[in-house]
Length: 318
Ligand SMILES: NC(=O)C1=CN([C@@H]2O[C@H](COP(=O)(O)OP(=O)(O)OC[C@H]3O[C@@H](n4cnc5c(N)ncnc54)[C@H](O)[C@@H]3O)[C@@H](O)[C@H]2O)C=CC1
Ligand SMILES: O=C(O)C(=O)Cc1ccc(O)cc1
Image 1 (cartoon, helix red, strand yellow):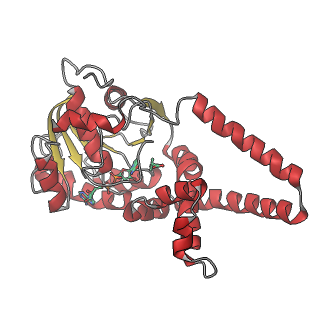
Image 2 (spheres, helix red, strand yellow):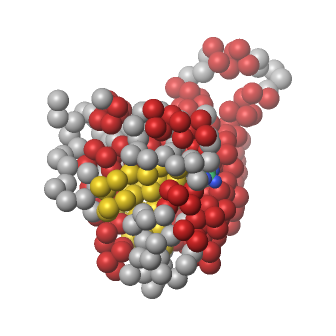
Image 3 (cartoon, helix red, strand yellow):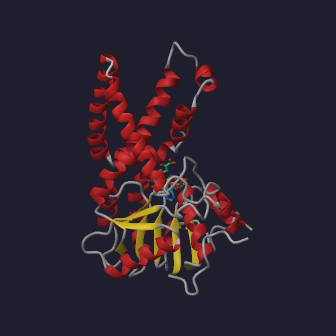
């Protein structure tokens, strides 16, 4: 059955793609690279031996070596798909093994801190072209990924000013063939935008679920039993990977604190409206926010891959 992801390329973009960290994002990338023939050979590496075994079992890669050095040696594309806090160590360990001209990219949710960690450690003859697919779920691990994850979602590419335009174009081609829409922006702007659209919302979800869990007057079983739609949505987000999100908040500290400051001010204004019985003020805000939700749906961003969703996982797993 056609899966909507389009035909495979006649000639691959890359000879050998090394995917470092094969959890949700790395395994989804491996699946779409395989599905679309974007690289002749896929090499996967993960620091967790159980994940390496699983990656082999489900056929995510052609080769899953036991060392990072072996994984990147000879690759013309290396994509770091580990938590952002792990990237500096990965860069240090892999640097001596990288071939000249290799494109080194990543999928980290924070860009400026990752670039600051990676750039000084990489040899001068490789191209660092960072990117962030703004697509994901609350799940993790190699079994959670699926080939259509990036379809009709944005990938933000944040090349340094002196990046080689051919390397940038090649990385953009990779993401476009994976089904993504691509936008280029500076790392600093990326971090500010994502702080308000992704990082602070996750913090709010972690906080509200934590607050509910710590209540004394309302039992945990009542919270679970009577959780209405809104709270349930928060619990989905608050189930996101603890290590990944710890690293995001530590790495995007300044932008998150800036946006959290604005959020707190607006929350105080809402508190005042409730205390003063300012129904008009509340209704005005809720009308504006409803319009934002509707414009997101009009843009088709709410459900990216309605037809095939996770079913496309079968692509690489027979
Ligand atoms: N989960 C999401 O929705 C999204 C995540 N991202 C970013 O993608 C990256 C990966 O996230 P997920 O795939 O969700 O996480 P995940 O937890 O599913 O997978 C991460 C993998 O990296 C491995 N790893 C950790 N340290 C490593 C090291 N030093 N060397 C090699 N492998 C190592 C882990 O063993 C794990 O298998 C993160 O940087 C995250 O910020 C980007 C977009 C969406
Ligand atoms: O599951 C969700 O709601 C997400 O928001 C997924 C997500 C998590 C991290 C990112 O950097 C991008 C997307």
